[in-house]
Image 1 (tube, helix red, strand yellow):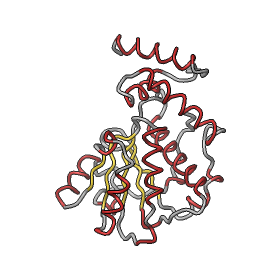
Image 2 (tube, one colour):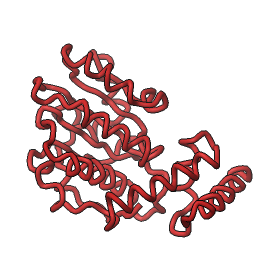
Image 3 (cartoon, rainbow, N blue to C red):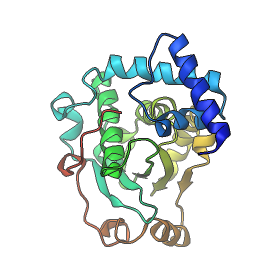
Length: 243
């Protein structure tokens, strides 16, 4: 690690302590994600880290979300956790045609945490928790107006930005219907520029080939042109993660 980063990390730890919180449980890779997300500004990164600590203790007091807390969201089997892509990042797939705007928004928020935590944990495999990233795939095939959930999409991306900084490597959007374009434009207004730059909307066969090539056939499900089988996230066994 560069010496300049050592200084910034030390400064960030001191600033977090001044705000009344401890960084003792967290390694440098975790703190670096917050520094990178705030362009190495230690003051902003410290505040972001403290906000994250407060948010975790409020929404995730046990350190993880149990499946028993999100039964309505798990029941449709709409989210899948695949193996690792060529880059070593786990692949998370959401099939939007199985999703409907939730009546219980708190349960939906917990579900977002559950799936992001589990995806990150699947990349760890004995290494120090810190800078693991993930690849997201949003599949809009066969969606109708009843499946449209702008609020849910905004929540997902805002959680990634605010509480899972530097976790998203890339997000591919597949099969976006014409009627959804205006919804996506509206949702995009709530997504930071740095996150938008990681989102790729696949619109033709050449782009689909590139998408398969970038992830790798072994991690892309058969349904999307690869060789893997879809695996519902609740069926995936991963190490427990409390970060």
